[in-house]
Image (tube, rainbow, N blue to C red; front, side, top):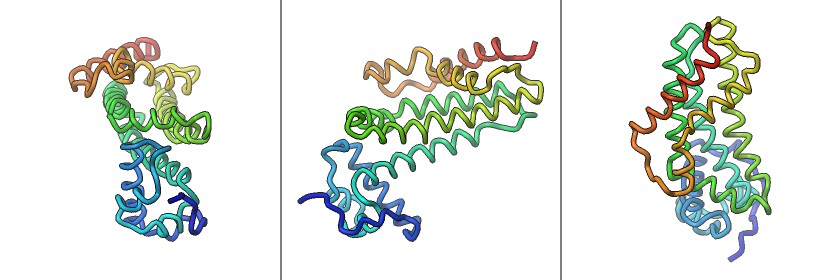
Length: 213
């Protein structure tokens, strides 16, 4: 059976939140299990326990549904990370440590790794998938972190010339020597102690460069 849309409205505005969550959860499970190319709407509808017509009433096609899954996945992670950034009067080192640990956990989860691999496998045919993941995930989070760092600089807790560059550098520092072994499948499920130590080193290095004199 083909995946031609039954009703290509592409509109989730009238979809109840619980039903939207049900569809996106089911779709994400199927995408993570078999990839974008092999996933079909029949399997997604069965997993989500809805009719295929219900899915097509709100998503034009499989690509739009996958983009919705990406946006939902990254939104949840982005909001969780943003909640860890405190006010300019708070403890910068503590805020960055909590942010970095949570970020590194997110980056090294099996679901996050699988999602990135699925997207990389289809970026030549569907470059908008990679663009969506980048815009909604790393870029948006970097902007939020940059805003926090600028607030800290305005409060005198940091010395910055370019908050966006500093945010980019901190995110890279947090990956340390841990992220690539996980990305390449050499290390699975890194222990919490390793994550804490990696981020602690990143925070100390960052504050030596940008902390007040």
